[in-house]
Length: 454
Image (cartoon, rainbow, N blue to C red; front, top):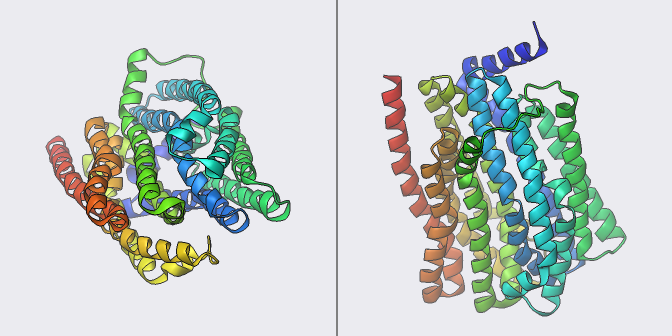
């Protein structure tokens, strides 16, 4: 029996035969830990920058971070769309097509990295000025962004290879690499900023060096040819590339719209509260990044199993896996809400304890923002669920409404009435509205699965 056949049978046993709760624990917990630890590298930047460089540097990073995330949007789109197709073809037993999709997607991500990195470096100043930054904040923002742009071709695949490792059952390997990368980033932040006293570029450099090392280590098993997915010279047809892009469009729009939405929020914050309000919002977003990482880690980890069982014609198992994920996401969100209401000051003091105005503004904003977690879990899990079932329209609408349309609408409505408090309230209001929309789409999807199973 060949090694590939053995790997395929093991993957079949895990995705199709393992009890749904046990499957959830096996797939979700390592990935949630992995994603949460990965988010620590951005938090480490915030902690060291806030304590050693100052509030202006915090504001600069928050202003430019949406642009950096937009540069990774194409990579995420290809990664998510290709992962669904790979899992579906593996569910059908076609390993050669899965390998072709994997190879073509890696090439496509490399091309996007070249284009996005060059554009970000060349147009850094016009982009930062477009965001409304000026003076020292603008200078710091450009210096931070250009480091990421220079390293783009070395780090862009990192967010995709994690998906491919999970498909091949290497969840613990993936988790170990993510934890190692994050710890390396924190160590480099300490060396570069805390000990050597370097400026804001050091925070970006620490992140990029860690991501580059993690990227190389994650690809090592694929280069050895020992996993279910292997590099091939055969590229996929143009029509399938279009399907990958369409199915990953919700992730792309989620990244793009989330980044554009962040720019709009930053502009409103500058208008109503100045750079101090932007710094307060950045602290809340640092904490939020860990929570969202746990949510998306949970959702992404279930995608291969859901897509695999959907491709294998097992809708009842698809429903069971998704319901466990939704229940776990709700419990996590409730715990985070209570944590932010009771221990918000402790969390915020990690980033800034000397600026009393910044502390007060951040605590007040966090307590209002925390109400969004009572609703946002459903949209996050549902959007991933629709993607896994190859329903890109539902996934795209859910993502766009949750991350852009509803937040911007409520921002415009509430900030005009309540000013800064209206900005904080816009996120809970948007999450509650997106929650209702997700329930409607979930009912339609479950009805279709019921028809398929009958």
